[in-house]
Amino acid sequence: MVRFKHRYLLCEVVSDDPRCRLSLEDRVLGGLVRDTIARVHGTFGAAACSIGFAVRYLNAYTGIVLLRCRKEFYRLVWSALPFITYLENKGHHYPCFLNTLHVGGTIRTCQKFLIQYNRRQLLILLQNCTDEGEREAIQKSVARSCLLEEESAGEELSDSGGEEAAEAME
Image (cartoon, rainbow, N blue to C red; front, side):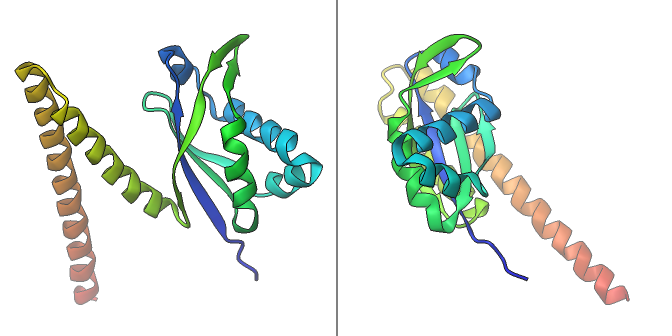
């Protein structure tokens, strides 16, 4: 059996209008990317990228999008993304563009990159704070995210310990 390798493009929807991100839907964004690939690369690009292309993750609040495509044709998708200049949804045109943050071979590597990217963004926000109240609010959110990360790591360790104990019993 042959395994088809994929590439994951982690993108950020950048727009001045906050309604743009809130109106995001995965099928609309997927259709927009497919149409842009067809417009930029013609029928060959559309046919090559249509197989295996999918919007795997979409967060409307943060504007983060994870696109999956075949490994052989990820450069076609990547090169077409700058040509997306607007998002059309429910009869409204919102000017925006897609900023490619990372290209990875697995969803896990994209998640790891996204965690590091968000930490860097929070540190930049922290350095640019002018008011002490803003600074404290950002520090609390960073502390909460670190606590959540430590709790999830502790749960993973306890889960694996339970599996080892079950195996030892058998």
